[in-house]
Image 1 (cartoon, helix red, strand yellow):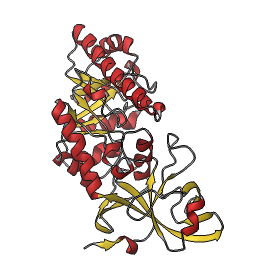
Image 2: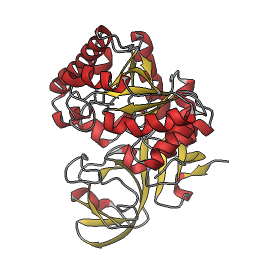
Image 3: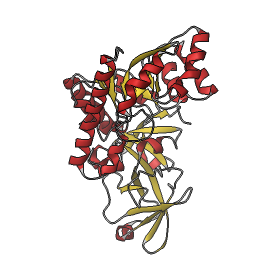
Image 4: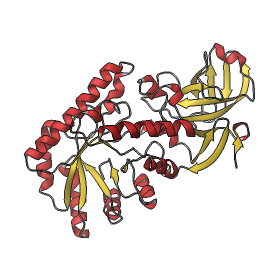
Length: 367
């Protein structure tokens, strides 16, 4: 049963089916042609129905950030899951070892300190832990410096119950290039080449390294195409968002995720209040400066002269000369700054075709 967007309670999280399918098809085709496997990051959708569409387009498996994401995919029968986060602490170690028994889990490690408790617990349980060595190619978050990768891999090889599958990196530092697309793509290509060089050094030292995995949407058309990279892990590409438009990764007409909202007050000239506040949006620090999202009409086209400048919990403040034509009851759609953070605010999404919601899917892997 379909529902007109005008009949949905607001705010509501929408995903445009046609745009999403086009995004999935385009990314899958690009990597298929290059001989690079696609392992999307599940954090963007956290939704099994969307993951099944990615599998239908040829995804080789998924990347996860949290135990909830890993568990949901394993429950859904996905057999190749990369947990790209160090499993540190008793609860995460126990989860990782338990999840190994369900098959197809690989974890990320970057130090002996993070690996030792996991190795001891796995040895006691009689299981082996496939892992990838995370390498820092410029983000300076987790990951070993490239020059220390051989040293750290050697130390990890001395621990029991660990099995090296390869190397990964997340070239998240590319977001710092902003609209400098040429600089961004050059940095992405360098990240890919750096990871390949680390893999070659590990092989020369006697370590098996079949997996060479890069991962980001800004770098999706640069890092994965360095010769020797075997897989890519973009996440946001499934929906795209205002931040990806700012970075030149997509156009507004590719943004599949929007928040449906309704004007609820026009009491002050130059300011319109809508019923989508910060609890409906993402306030990610990497978001486009100064706004909470891009305000669009009901067809998803950005409105001139209207900015989503701030928000309270359940109220959004729209300002600018374009607000003069808005009236109480008007429906708008907002492209979030960051799709992944916005997803985590919602328990479900409406799949839409044009001006109608055609399905509803739960978002089950939230924190």
